[in-house]
Amino acid sequence: MKIAVLPGDGIGTEIVAEAVKVLQALGLKFEIEYALVGGAAFEAHGHPLPEGTLKLAQSADAILFGAVGDWKYDTLERSLRPEQAILGLRKHLGLFANFRPAICYEQLVDASSLKPELIAGLDILIIRELTGDIYFGQPRGRRSATDGHFPGTDEGFDTMRYSRPEIERIAHVAFQAAQKRSKRVTSVDKANVLETSQLWRDVMIDIARQYPAVALDHMYVDNAAMQLVRAPKKFDVVVTGNLFGDILSDEASMLTGSIGMLPSASLNAKGQGLYEPSHGSAPDIAGKGIANPLATILSAAMMLRFSLNQPEAADRIEAAVKKVLAQGLRTPDIYSDGSTRVGTAEMGDAVVRAL
Ligand code: NAD
Image (cartoon, rainbow, N blue to C red; front, top):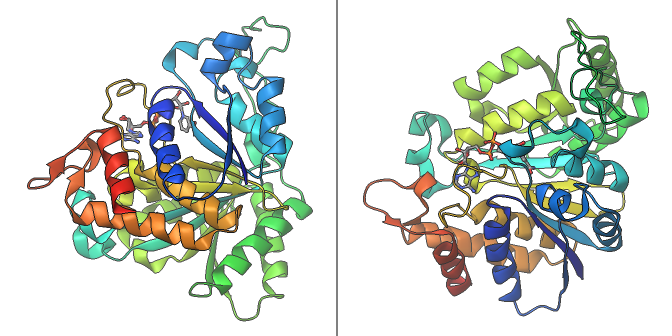
């Protein structure tokens, strides 16, 4: 089981260290290899996704990724910005299916900004297409020069596109996931305005015929954004494109109280996957030892289940996380009165003890 560990920037290094600690406590044999990515790789090698990092990622069974990015890179030409490393990994490894579960842990019901009755027991799965749409179209504008000079134009545009095969494969992923859950898929689009979305909707309807046991409904993205805060438990599996999925999955993650709790998996057709927390590099709290490592630890659990065929180990980690929450341990992002405030490393140590 070869794992490429790419901690990245900001809190990335702090939270990944805790996830590796937990993996090592399982008593399984892993081959773990580290590489730089994002801003850290740009500083050392002049590129956010150096050749060596990409080769390591390609050769591994799974990638454990922290986070990348810092405000100080905001003026860089777009192709050299830390976030390009994630887009590059998705593209080179064909990681087209992003799984973002939004689960409300019983012990954290009060951490949500919504009323407890709206989110208690929440367990939804957002499946976001990850290698198409506007993020992989053709950009043109102030920060997109390929020659290293900003063109300084006063127009910016990006093209949104999807092809039938791209939509078909994410549709299959969504219907198959729904078969193992409550057999409902909500496809989110903007078919009233966008041609890309009309194709998306037509293909979803076509593929649904192969899954007669699963009910499909459609929702416009603006309505979906409202319904997610009005009655989130009405959803089960939500499937959507790259741009809408980016926004809705962050919205869904905040329903549960903290973005610091939620893992994600991005898989290719071979089952190879990149596992990372749903949040970013949080430069505002980096280096303070207070970041919540649980999203990354839970991402390691998803890695064991989806790419390394170790479902029991994944169950053990998830049970250990529930146990530390039940013990009342909280990093500041999920802290509430009466619980015990802990830092990043203490939280990791507690999960290891609970294992
Ligand atoms: P962010 O997710 O980094 O932070 C948003 C807020 O959530 C901040 O207040 C932060 O302190 C808090 N937060 C995030 N993770 C936390 C954790 N584990 N524990 C406690 N609090 C946590 O989003 P942002 O501030 O919009 O972006 C910061 C940088 O991260 C940017 O450079 C952005 O491009 C990058 N980013 C990277 C990824 C990625 O690596 N996959 C994803 C999103 C954003």
